[in-house]
Length: 425
Image (cartoon, rainbow, N blue to C red):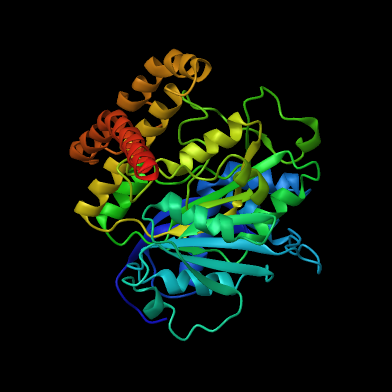
């Protein structure tokens, strides 16, 4: 390394490759070994509780108090086994794209470098004939990669196309603006393998920023980003973890609108037992990017799985990096869409059955408090510099979401009636 200007960013700390927390750093020395030394000391200082928990769980004694003692103990930590054996079942990874994201090739290449090698990678082109997919993947010759055309626009249609084409018992999903960690697939599959009774229907993982080069990317982190923490969480309607999977993790801390809120995970890092996802009908084609509702398809599928009796698990060792929107216009659209998507999902399930409606209505006052209170867990990361205009944009999305869902339902009914008339003619 050569000398240069100070650097800043978000850094994921690991113990023998396992993510244990993240820290925000600035004024980094540009040269090694000073940079690594500073990062190790900062992680030991800021992530003390998490490090102590992981070290003690591994049976490693901490002989000295403070950061120095934690770092010394970490050196004695044995390497964690990452393999799953030689007889690996096939796993499908689906990437949906409009062919406008140049990072698509990097996502595919990252998947080809996974420590879990028995993969099929399905790139679903949601704009066939006009997209940049052939250009981005030009020269990438690997029999594990297939391109599937899905001309019906919408993230849900594209994901369902990947689901239909999947040839494996487990189907994972990520996006074209991410960078999966090399252990991502292995760590996702480990959760399913810890459940021989097949009570777990789906798994989500940790999403961290791929870069924080602009203020707007930092603002997305303050908004709440995709970060769900560094502890495993089990998501179920039950009040206790079934004894068969007690070793998998603990119950998650359910938000006021669980299972319809954003507790469970993010759509850019998720996986399912293929048969279970097919059994609930896959992703709702009326929801998500590319439709009038603009979002919510991932939250909806988590709720559908949980309401069907399946268990979802959040596994922070399954890491994907996401490249946040870097400019003001893109960030505003994203937050508006997130607000709309959340409200769309709540509206859908509110209208779906009296039982679900009662559950939602009972918790709506608490949900409003979470949205508007500066002290709520949702807004805890926002600093005094967080623009009020972004909060207003998000709230506008929440306000318009119910209207968008009703419009989507009306369009579907209108299309159905037109189809029936055409058939009768």
